[in-house]
Amino acid sequence: MSDSKQVFIFGYSGHSYVILDSLLDAGYQISGYFDCSKASKNPFNLEYLGFEGKENVSDIVRQNFVFPTIGENSIRKKLIDLFERNHLKQFVAVDPSANVSGSVKIGVSSYIGKNACVNALSAIGKGAIINTSCVVEHECEIGDYSHIGPGSILCGNVKIGSNAFIGANSVVKQNISIGPDILIGAGSTVVKSIDSGTVYFGNPAKSK
Image (tube, rainbow, N blue to C red; front, side):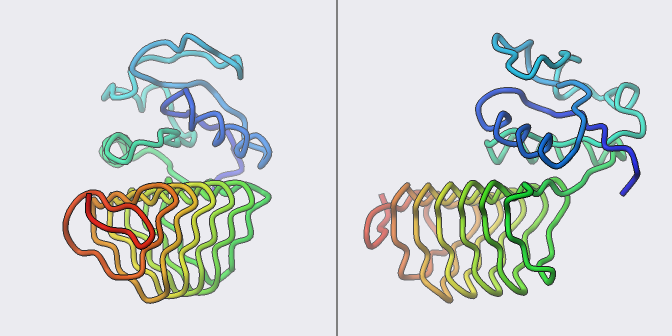
């Protein structure tokens, strides 16, 4: 990683405030934000730099870092595609309060939130979110662009497919697999593997 800790963020509302807190606590300097329009609220006093999908973004960003601060999986994927097309510098954002094993592998543009715990030999894809106070136990695999909601617990050897969403305070039993693009409702308990469908919720989680 470069000595420079200048970051341009993409998205500026809701979930982005949480990531901004983490970046600032980690010593990064925020150079401004891109979004679909100028934000009506500006709690961090950031400069608006234009549409988040503009293809000439590299002319503004230059050699500094970029980070997607949007909770929606599909939009985050589009932003990372933009970063890759423009050869922009990505990194992993880890809140200083998080506890991440040194054996964990994490893809670029992923975020590990406040008080999250990621244990030994887990692997997290690019553009994933491990939100506030999550527990990701040993040897879990989390796919690209997935979002693990606040307070969720993934027991050992859980596999989460790409673009999946695990709602807040959900629990996934050990050795369970959840396929791509599946949404698990908040507070659910997953006790059997899920490889198809779209939305599951409840205790035990069942298809909507």
